[in-house]
Length: 350
Image: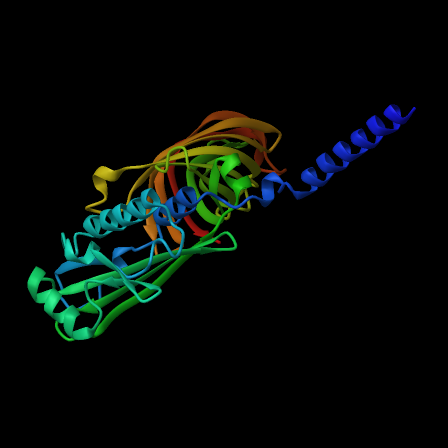
């Protein structure tokens, strides 16, 4: 009997230990995002270190040296993450073609000294005078200081450009992004919404009872899109949209009114980055209008417009369908709508 009590007590103890351990385990969506993925997503964002932010700097500032002014060990950032951040920053600077990036070996060196019972970490330049001397030594016009930190799933990179001649502050910027492990598991790291207004160059036609026909050229389109960028391939984006289209011209004779549901793939075109940031889009939708329905095929290019806007220009094609028009005493009630024409859209992300 005593043995059974002992076994029972042991089982209860083990069960309690497992239950306590389970309570201590973080849920999947509570786990912090990995450092590598978090900083990678921040640096891959199109709004991080763009040329427009540096365009007003002194034209004489050309040769720039990267300088990490943080303590990687103190901030607990692994070496591979540190190198990834530095490489991506250097890649962004080179892509801008605004600066000549020079290799500064001294800027990467740190000295560790034990003074008494205290461990001290010293950088290559510990004073303004040393920084000016370092600038002359490596022939740099400016230093781009950077450091990275993470707190409560918020990844932050601070950048500061300092004149190597007089230590003057030329430019200052902070970039940050919040992400979670759950977002990583989903694979999509950036979701934005867009309001759009545009025009399709498709036509509607109906016959005149006495002879001849009337036409309406073009419809106006209003839409709401959900855009997703994936960490699998940063050059691809996907959108889902719901759009309403109608005519504002020839409204006495035509009453086009419909809804289009569209899926779209958007791909970056790096070969055109030197000219303008360009993307190509391919969309396929299903539309419903005037007692008819039709597929909608769209193909074209997307160009940036201000910081959060864009312009789409391409072609739209939808098979011509028999439709019902509003009653007019001098016109036939049935007619045609569809065709191939231009696709012009102005959008705003929020």
